[in-house]
Amino acid sequence: MTAVAAPLQATIDPWWFVVAAVVLFLVMAALGPRVSLSLRETRSPMTDEQDALDALLAAADLDPPAIHISETADPSSIKISLHGLPGRRQLLLTEGFLDSLDDATATALLTAEAQRGRLFYLEYRAFASAIVIGVATAMFGGLIAFSNGLFVIALTALVLFWIGRQLQFRADRAAADRVGADALADAFEAVADHRGVDPEGATWRTYFEVQPPLGQRIDRLRADE
Image (cartoon, rainbow, N blue to C red):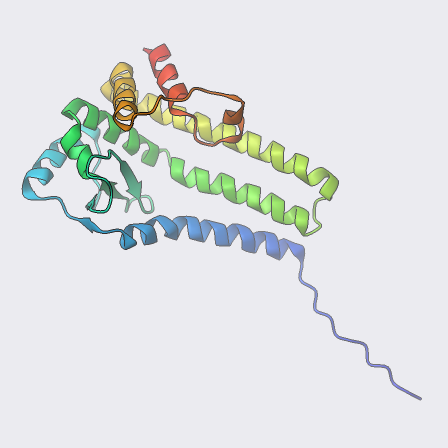
């Protein structure tokens, strides 16, 4: 009698692939900004810059544990962003932010960024993208029929991205409550003018974006005033 050896096969539940994809993306989203910041050539504010920033940050109700001024960006560029996890967000800005803007415009922009941080907008963007990736992984893993998968992905993205846009509008309204809707809209327009761009309004593509276009944000601020 001949014994036939059956090959041993290890099966992995497709749900593990979904979980792994979502967790990996969230980890990268959490660590990515911090790693990116550490790789940039930055410097700490000089004494006169720190004094000016202290007044601006107090007006914006923002108290980052560290401030970095980019040395690689175009000195005339105007960019500000918060990096890191909630409670440990560090502020990155360009020299142009300090040199090219009046105090009212700078305060409005800092306030807008502070409110985005308070409402966890950046974290929500990562969460929404992770969910879409999870649904796509489930489809390719056979958990969702491929014939229905694309529809599910599109519907999920539309809903999550709509929520994200509403969160951004809410952050703008919160910032407008502090500095005034017209002042915030003027600040957005000033930066767009400095960059030589015309703020784009809402189009059909907006439905597939978690970040509303600047022109739409400005229009809503003007309408709320």
